[in-house]
Amino acid sequence: MPEFGAYEQFIGADALGEIRQVARAIGGRTVLHVNSTPVGGGVAEILTRMVPLLNQLEVHSRWDVIKGGEQFFGFTKRVHNALHGQPEVFTKDDRDLFEATTQANLQDMDLTADFVLIHDPQPIGLVQSRERLGGHWAWRCHIDFSRPEPAVWELLEP
Image (cartoon, rainbow, N blue to C red; front, top):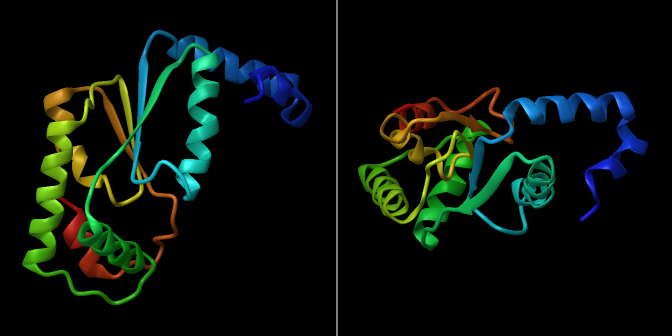
């Protein structure tokens, strides 16, 4: 893993200085990233680099991955496709599976942090704990959902 300073040749000294200034302002706070896979996806590729760099900048960061079975990840693949606009029907069984998997993860995960970033649709149900746990929460969707299937919003909105 390169040291943060090694990026100067790509982004320049001014940009590096700005990032360091923002990091000092955030310093002492904690950042938690949650996604659905530790390897093999775009978010995992981003986080394998971002989390260590943030820690180098003394922005205390960690990364956790939700757990779910084959049915859950099959369901969330359909959610992914619906966000891209593919027609999908979501049943009560789908909703129950999503809720049960979310609840199991809420029991098993430490979601306490000053900033919690939920990546992509699979762990979006975890945001229901934001008021209980506090902190600042954001959902980052790394896929294009400019023309989603309406049924998917009905599912994800709560």
